[in-house]
Length: 197
Image 1: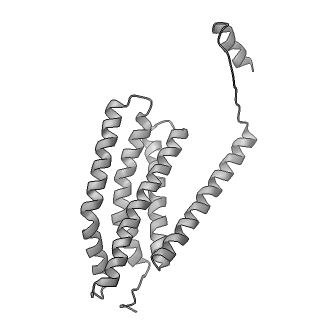
Image 2: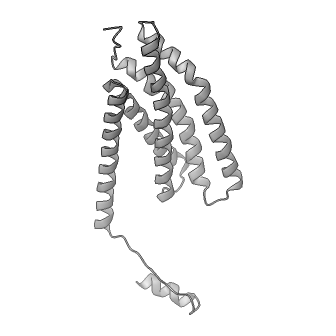
Image 3: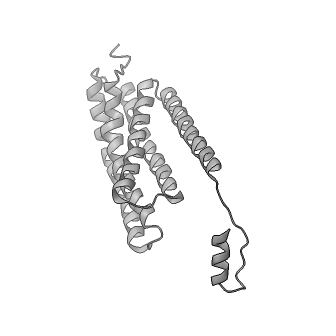
């Protein structure tokens, strides 16, 4: 409380403190544990949902590994650039995770459609065809998002600079991971279509 008294002595008497919050180490440790549990449960839920939606655990595991890659690389981006890690950083990571999983699901959806309608029995060719069909959509979505983010970075001011920089990184890495990590992992994990089995 000595810090508050020091600040009060410097500021004018008409300044009013309506609320003061302090998070102790015990509460901080609890929040950390609860946060880790929430992330683990959300990843497990996502894995199960994608597994059943696309009829293969390989789809779920590929998506979760790509998502984990995006989150870890964004944390690495914060570490390398020395951008302050705060609540807006957590919001940026969650936004990047949502963007990335959405992009991955779009590619997976096309793979599922092509498995049903294409007579090709080689799964690698189905995968390649599906990625090529969604590539223009993926690039256009990423470019339009990046245009908006760059405008926010240039015009938004210093307050949101770190948040926007991490989102720019996340869009680039999320686009990359949905094409080059999530989709090939389905084949690497040994997914077989009914035509192949």
